[in-house]
Length: 214
Image (cartoon, rainbow, N blue to C red; front, side):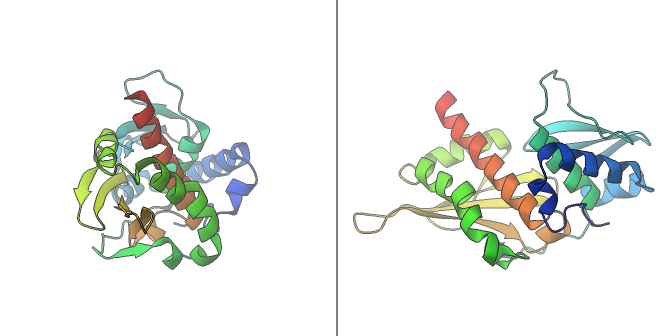
């Protein structure tokens, strides 16, 4: 099953329309149990599923596509609702490859990279480059775990089957801090390139917010 935004274009039409399109595709889903298996979601029954997103549990009602944070009355931001639906609808269930790839290796990634870098990598480096240890602390709130890339890195399972690795290099007097964001080579079987951009931007924003609230 392909995501309704396989080209990423529906985000450009506005969040309300993106959500509407995703809900329409969800309503036409024929095999809810099968899609739960592919996405790693837990089927509640034929009319609902629960999935993990950034270390919290969200309930998706089927077929209407309403999304609620489990055990909380906090309103779910619209961009999070769209990402959750895109992941659930588009998940192909392919296993992790263990091979990490960069954003430029995604479909259209070379063209989109300047925007991706500005929206996700630059805030990551600005906020954590001079004190990378903060990345470990703030990413733990999202279920992050230390990784082996760069001078310091963490991997966050943004969704059950979407591990994202945030990498930092400290820099020195001559070289500025630098960073990268890496993905399992199967990520395009779960999210479009534009979805990946929005997801990484959202992750970094949450971690930066974690610094400010600490």
